[in-house]
Amino acid sequence: MPVPPWAAEVWENGPVTLPATAARPLRIGPLTLAAPVVLAPMAGITNTAFRRLCREYGAGLYVSEMITTRALVERNAATMRLIRHHESETPRSIQLYGVDPATTEAAVRMLVTEDHADHIDLNFGCPVPKVTRKGGGAALPWKLGLFRDIVSRAARAAGDVPLTVKMRKGIDPDHLTFLDAGRIAEDAGVSAVALHARTASEFYSGTADWDAIGELKQVVTSVPVLGNGDIWAADDAVRMLAETGCDGVVVGRGCLGRPWLFGDLARALGGPDAAPDDPVDATLAFVARAFRRHAELLVEFFDDEGRGCRDIRKHVAWYFKGYPVGGELRASLATVSTLAEIDDLIATMDLTAPYPGAAAEGQRGRAGSPKRTALPQGWLDSRDLGEDASCALAEAELDHSGG
Image (tube, rainbow, N blue to C red; front, side, top):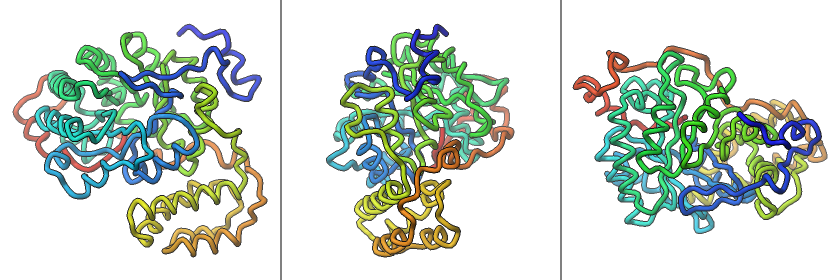
């Protein structure tokens, strides 16, 4: 890939910021984002509370938890709650997971006609065995005709609302799908294509193959290509853009316990108005305030203090990674039931503790290990959808996320 003249200096001379002439917005259909940054959907994480928190730090596109098309069309109560956005969320973004063209089309049309979303994404990247063993998620693009039918019908139903696709490289190194899927999606009329540069068999292990993002960028030329995988800090995003030529980045696990990463990204990649504040000094006091704010927003989202505080528990290890917060205090934070308890526990911390550097950086969340992808019997025998595969797909719409 051709490297911009500024790129060789970016990670040598810090701070990691694109030159003003290189900073650019991202256009996805009619939407213009002040920074080319997208929050990846994560089950149980990217609810309204977390999206609002991330948005407070910087510009970007903040996508919902993955919504199953069947549950949406059937107006499942929990699903209908998940597609709601706070009035401060603009643009409103929803990701859908579906395996049936008609159901996916109906779900997209419902979101559009009932004005639930300003952007819709389709997930073809889920590596969870319960999904892939029935032919869904990252397994689905192997069936080219089915993939084309789903994306084409969804794009038509979306009308003026931009529709995008998120996918993986393929099932495993011997069964790659991303270049074919990218071409099909572009021809179908999507507004952008995002690639998590791992196969389903890799899950989240190893190192993302950024070269694949560059390959996709060479093939998909009329709409933006977004890169996903191993964005742990702003300098990672800058390198990805420089090395691959992609148009923006999608960030998932890197923001767990670090919602202010979106401020760093907006300052590094966006224009002068993308992030209003100065660079973060992530002292323990700063982190504790962010954790408390997250809990407060969860309580508001669930309209239940106990439930909101139970939900924040899973974020404790991510927020305080590398900080001098002892095991007993962490254990207490992981059992809180009220905001007052959180306040009392924060009051016992040494809030003057500085940012711990490398100890707080790097990979976050579970990576898993490479494994053979679970697939329906005979799935790889043909790229056409046979009767047996159709039966497997009928059970594939489970409430799992990933990508």
